[in-house]
Image 1 (cartoon, rainbow, N blue to C red):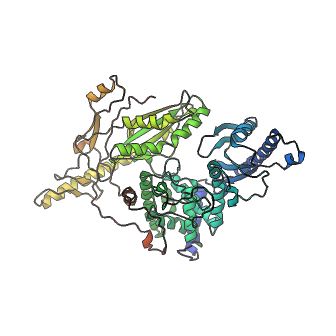
Image 2 (spheres, rainbow, N blue to C red; image 1 turned 45 degrees about the vertical axis):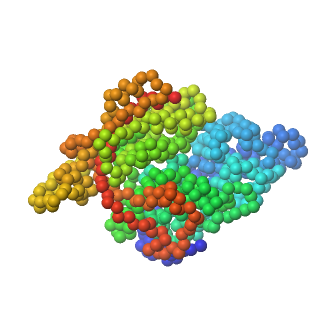
Image 3 (cartoon, rainbow, N blue to C red; image 1 turned 180 degrees about the vertical axis):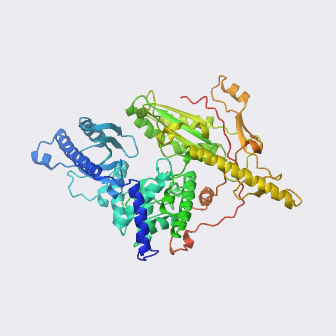
Length: 636
């Protein structure tokens, strides 16, 4: 295993790490002693319940021998953030129940154990999810959220000292059982592979906090989840075994801002066993070859933990890595402090147009199941929109939900998706945007395929302008006035800089032929030195009338883009996009990246193998389109 640097920490590193960890304390990212003891108590009581459960199952199977009944055992394992030691306030517990060969998942785990939990005091919000890829029972025990999985091993008696890392446990197990065991095995393997667990935990807390602040923490929505961030941080810890968290955080962004995806991130070589379980290998598996951001689990069977990442979410994360890398360089130079790294991404001020996805159900139990199904498929809506809009529109999904304070929050919530024109794409006269059939396709071919759908489960999709965003998405339900004033201030600055540019150009004169130019703020200018016209979208009258006519399919509204006078429009500030994600996606589409490749010979400060190619492409700043869409046929 290669190591980039073994340098010992300096006095400045110690001081910087203390400043970094103080931010974590100030942000209350550590569970209190009372909360920690409460989790320990819940696990103890849950362990007692499963041991009582397995003895009842043993007797129900017709085993009357008292000694065998007493030997019957089921064991609890924890994994995820709790097992890694980075649990914070209100963090749930991921637990695995391991039972003997005669205790089945369907009849005994989702049957008898579920009923026992129903009868247990302090257990509430009990939700079985037997049809999930990894079957789970979700509930709250004395206020602590628990996700309980089950693994039926080929043992007649489960030993109390069972080691979950033994590969022999996986013999003759089905895929769901292997996936259920995988969480514990991966977590324990990570802890065994990092050189310093304390530094690993502090760094992981920083990166989890940063990812949540920047809106890129969600495996289900195509970003990275807890286990993905843990694997990336563990890799950096391996490359810098003696570094303190301040260095590890900085090197994390330096490495992954330039990582050549889809080269995989691995903590150890991929393991193979004489068992039929699927192991990630793009050399022989076409499906693995399509993964854009492979982060490989270290225990057998080694799989890609980030298969949900799409070209869109990869692009967003690369932009965030690059931003954080530049901030860390300024922090190391003493120009900024660590708190600037954790500034939140202002999602509701970054776009002019949004999609609002509202889901609801009749009761809390139905809603929990419905929400989990819809949430795991919202990333497909992004793919459909960008596909049907020809890649002109780009979407960014907020990785969380919101509930109205005035409405019962246990049976409804809202998701939001930002819409913006792809950078560098100029608006075209008469350009049309229509998402109605796209949304209809999403609902009919994805959402309504839910086999457990019940009456009252609903989903509504609507378009919103930035100023129409509901107040309940903001902290305290109050829209911050500063964000609006800031936008006005920037708009005035842009207009003033444009006027100044006009004045300078008129004084200096023009060469023959009109040429485009740019202001320092990145606003594109046309040949007449006016701001390039920004598009607006208006539905035509004919499209509205046609949508109300009787037809077997909803009609697309004719949504056209027209140019506006530059005095009546606001100009959004151009942002530089990291083009690595687009390059990798294009290479994958053409089949040029098809081999299994690794990063080797990493060097300190100047790693050529990790550096992405530099593209000097002409950049044209454009106004994001204002999209007015009508979703009039979005019912089931």
